[in-house]
Length: 350
Image 1 (cartoon, rainbow, N blue to C red):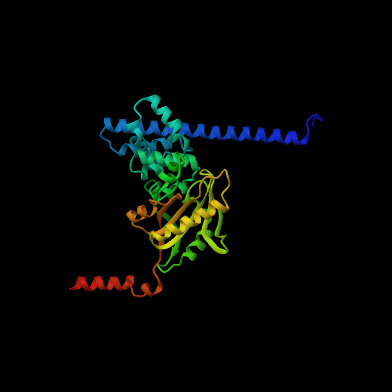
Image 2: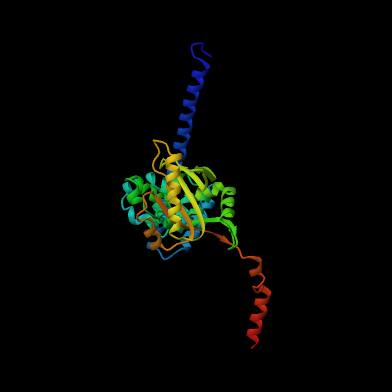
């Protein structure tokens, strides 16, 4: 190595070269994906146009798949089902893409940024273009895998984002209030938890911590975990926050309180007290105001809105759901499959 170049300088330069290589690799992957998506778009268009001209109907897809696989035996993506997806893909978006130039821009800037498998999930699950665009942008922003996207589609993320009852409009400045509103959901779906109806709040906290990765995925991008039952000493008394997070994009602490009951107005007052304490004890000068999220099993939206109307601290109220399993004493009182079958036979014989 040249004596004029120190080891530390070389390492720094090497890291820069590595970044260039990774950036080039990423651009190559995206470029290749854009070409693939354009191929499926054109294929879908050709199928739609040919079906409109002929009387073959869907038979043409089956024949085309067979002929293409025979001609290109090593090429993937030529199955009958995939060609049907190509047709559905074209039909789904063709209403907003009228010209070849629009098609190129649409594919390069939107659907071409995510893999074909992600696109298939979206066009088969989304109800309309608005919902599809939401999942495309969220996939790009969050780097979701196909499984993660499937989970968000299953839990209807589109229908839950921004639906929490909040007072952000008069407690946070714009555009922070809008960003905070879109950060919250209603309801939160913790379908990775399994409890009976007699579950205690501390048990929910414990399992959320055991499934922290899935919990953070449901909370959304930007949440960093700080602590569970976070201790604060106020006026010689001890207080414990159920869950404390820091939100990187909102630049603020987030206090989450869990209530395994229906919402009552008193909960908002207690959370307001906690937010004041965090603002005084933990908040730094460059942090924004601490936000509170109250998660309840049920709520009346009008009660929730009234409860937050005159509270000065920013907070939102949402419901949460998990998979409930039947307690043993109830299971024993339900008929078995065999008993149901016997009863059906008895009714048929009458």
